[in-house]
Image 1 (tube, rainbow, N blue to C red):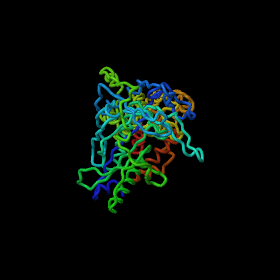
Image 2 (image 1 turned 90 degrees about the vertical axis):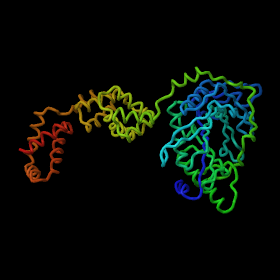
Image 3 (image 1 turned 60 degrees about the vertical axis):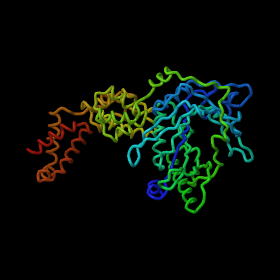
Image 4 (image 1 turned 135 degrees about the horizontal axis):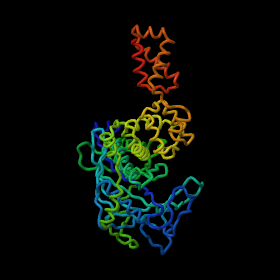
Length: 485
């Protein structure tokens, strides 16, 4: 049963997301300990992370600024005072016995974000976004009879973005999650590495009969770090709840995990409410004042987001919508495109087509990102100029690009050293075309008898003899004139 099928039947899905964004900070949220992924177990643990008596938290200023920056990007309220609270629970990978988080006075208040749905644009309201430290990690599969604890992750700075329950199918949830992902990666506050857990999500899913105002009992599906898995997990969970209700049962409020191999959710524990955590203001971390100057300073870091780029690319640069969307949604490609566009006299549309065509094909063959390619934007701009001014054809430009890639030479150097410049001398082309016509009398007769497809045969012969260097526009014009004689 798909999301759209559910929507047309008697049950309505209601979804809210809690997205955990790991901030790209060098140190942890309340200590100066490093916060890099992949270090050897328990090699990045401060006294505070270990819960040793007498340790005190000191807020990471960069994390606070990143949270404010995110809030501004979703038109959220930024308070003058923000307060940290202790979220109390017992788990082996939380030595302090509490997590420093936020409850009543988060750093980011109400905001909103627009998503694209099958029915058009839709606004999803954001309840809040708060700063909190991550817990450590329990490793259950390393030893047969023991659980290993790695506290490297403990204290890592997170922003948790909490939405209102306003999504009505899994595709909307994915669209919302992607939009938040776009925000945090373009803001430069998160590296966006899904495999490393930099961006993960808890989905609160419930169902109710169509027309019912009261929300159904929800289940929380934890730790989803894939756009594909979140859609599958939500759809399975909704089907599970509908099956229970239609058989006369009662849905239990609980926390569940998604098993990707079996494509199903399974119970983890009963779902806690806020009261179960006994939140209270952290006495060791005083309330923090957020000045207007701090907020204004973060406004200067707000980038042009993909939707704005796409509009500008189409309206101002004349790029096709599909091409504009692909480029704008790739941070590194958009940066490379704009740098080369500023340095080249070629039309932006040619730049976009070549970048998404020949250039991207070479990236795929080499299996590298555009950020790691050996050709910089200035060198690439030189190649575009050579195509735009007729020095080389686009077909030959592909060969030039490959030679630039391996040699480190500029486009001009490759063209000169290999004699790849386009033949645009009309006298030379006229002489060459005349000889091709003389050498192919039967094909000429065939063409003049009405077989217009033979025209491409002559073009092919000319390009073969010139190794693709004949100016295609001039060649076509001269050939047409000669064949009429």
